[in-house]
Length: 227
Ligand code: CTP
Ligand code: CA
Image 1 (cartoon, protein in one colour):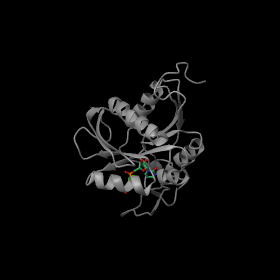
Image 2 (image 1 turned 90 degrees about the vertical axis):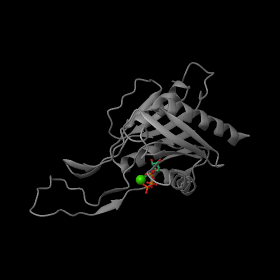
Image 3 (image 1 turned 180 degrees about the vertical axis):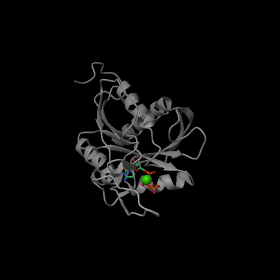
Image 4 (image 1 turned 60 degrees about the vertical axis):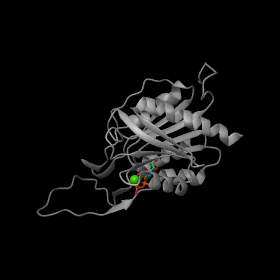
């Protein structure tokens, strides 16, 4: 089942998007997570589908919903689950946009029984999760790979470092310290930078509108790739 209409910007393209937070279990009743709500990733999935793409949306736990029949939604919980799902769909994707806020650390031991509280403090060890985006950058062949960067200081400098280190085609830098940007809200303010260091500042707008502008820049840069 593809789109009937054949004259849209992303007709014939498969777009893989990741959205939302991850949850890293401590025991059956506790987990670590972050402030991501999934709104930006869902807005990107919707915008791509409206532009004719077939979309696979891999999402961590979120209240977001989508009715679009060109979006197939894959629900995951942990960073490890998201890693597996992203690698499963990566080979058949044309554009991959990694908007998810993946946990960088997880508890080293996951307890099968609920931990009982003890007198005094609690200490436990955390280990690194896999960097999903970096692993996709290493595997990349034909895909146009887009990462996000959430920063509170030196956003451009840190974002550019991620673009290079993870072998991306573009990065969307989110200065989450700004009013109107980042986690939770209905708006965002981002800077899109491609691999040729061309920078586009997207002024405060709804996440839906930001998503449409991002797709336009991605489409422009994909065409440049082929010339
Ligand atoms: N990312 C990922 N897997 C991880 C951590 C991050 O795929 N384990 C991806 C995110 O989805 C995002 C990009 O990497 O697209 C940047 O995430 P961010 O948290 O800003 O950067 P990190 O590389 O994790 O570095 P730090 O948190 O130290 O700034
Ligand atoms: Ca991180």
